[in-house]
Amino acid sequence: MAIGLLIREAEQQDEEVFFKMICELENAIPEHQNFIDVFRKNCAADNITYFIAELEGNAVGIISCHIQSLLHHAARVAEIQEMYVDPAFRSKAIGKALIAHVVRFAEGKGAVQIEVTSGNSREGAHRFYQREGFAKSHVKLVRYFTK
Image (tube, rainbow, N blue to C red; front, side, top):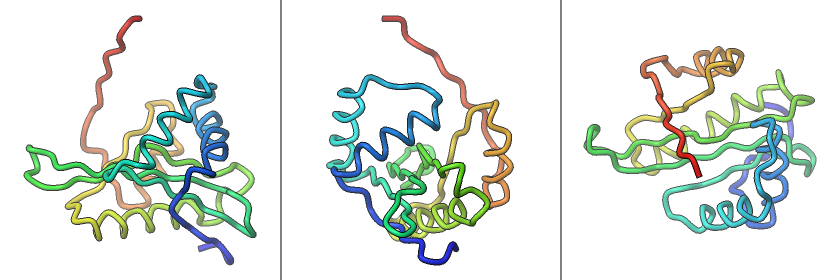
């Protein structure tokens, strides 16, 4: 782990850090107020937790953990829905530390496994997750709704 790295649970005042990093992760800018509304709602939810990684007081990465009880597992399952490390701080074991942190957190909450979905084009992310012990085991299909 990077020396001096702090991983803590995110709070409402971290919403702009999350907005910036999610914009960079998705290479898109969501409608700001909608993002803030969702962030605040999720921060208040019992089954969603956001974490932020800091070095010397500066945010360098984020990760989320959503835990839900799934019938087909007859158990609680955790999912990483977002993870991002600032490019200037990659290859410094920050992503590895974020994964280890959220795995311990999910196990402590009684999850029997942790899942992550990553876009097809993010091959570097796929290799990272596999190095961290995730196996390619499913295909995710998406159907978009028109407005």
